[in-house]
Image 1: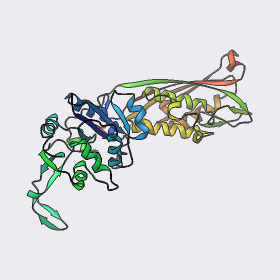
Image 2: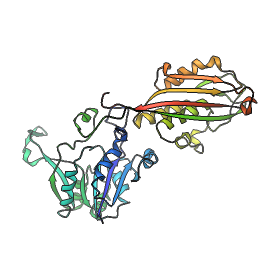
Image 3: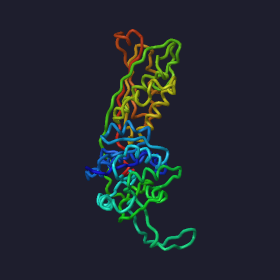
Image 4: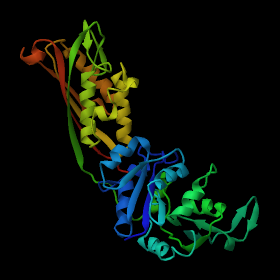
Length: 373
């Protein structure tokens, strides 16, 4: 039985990564980076437990894509690690960052072989350039670059992290606590993804799949007297609006479901629960903007949308072009890639009785191509 737990940190906001996609959601083939890295390391079959630390908003989505334990991260790397350590029961823990995507399995094996030699085992690289510190030249032989992953005794690491002082790696915390560390040879190919151009040097990363994905959405709302009607993002001249927790824009709601369906990211109720008072009477254009932002962060680009509004009343033929342009702008698309249609039910059913409106929406997305810009 293995005495090792693997923790992979993927809870950051990618604030220095000036790309619309969060780096942990860059697609490698079909897999987001966090899943690609985790699968790549766990093929070693050396770990009793595998924990991935996610941004709190992403835990549910990530858990739906794998069988690993997904833990909600904190505001800092150290807080995220502390959250993960609560789930660790093995004697040793290996911690790495998803951003260090191309760590070699040989490096991890070196850490495991050395695990009894100190409280923390770290990979380091020597520098060959001249080093200046505070305008003074220092001996480069005394300088080392510290990398992850790092292997630690679990009980020592838990105690070392129980502090208000923030450390940038496990070994610094352990040494400050009074523990020991030893070194293994690092990996020149294990650079971190911090900035966009860092991707160019990571040879283990392959481009995203070029597949297109399609989703559909359907929503219905009954009429409510005396309420403003919003449909397709614009105000409709009508004596009634829609009965709903939000403003009831049934067209946007169906479109959001279509977009989430195309990206396999659940549905509108999962993203915007109707028992959350922060969404009460909210403008649905705000919800669509948040949905589009989520898709972009998760590595998707919207290709196209098609909406069919089914209404006996009100008559909306002369509103369609305005809807098209408003929705296109919200999705960062040309109006030429958004279509809005309208039809009736020939007086059949609740729509035909003028009790409400139904909308069917279809949308397609593809992965953001980080390889070719």
